Amino acid sequence: MDKIKTIGKRKKSPGGLVNTNNLLKLVIELRGNKPFYPKGLYRFKSFEEKEEWEKKMRSR
Image (cartoon, rainbow, N blue to C red; front, side, top):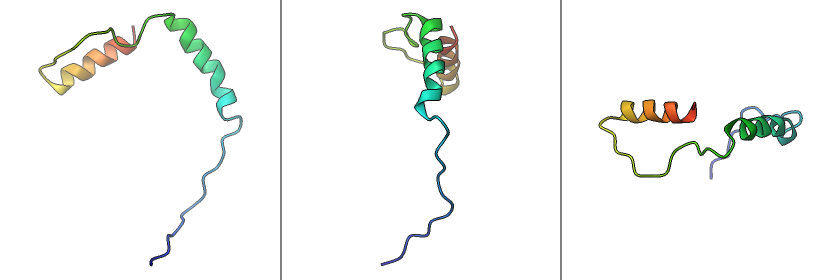
């Protein structure tokens, strides 16, 4: 059986989820009750068209 070689170590971020809590609260406050994507079935002619639509929906 081969040994697993470890390269580097993962460092804990200072604050963890506590620091991201303020960002999450801001996102919820700005978006209100609007979902990222409207409900429904969407069909696109190309992957690029889908990507552009998603970008537009996320930034509204």
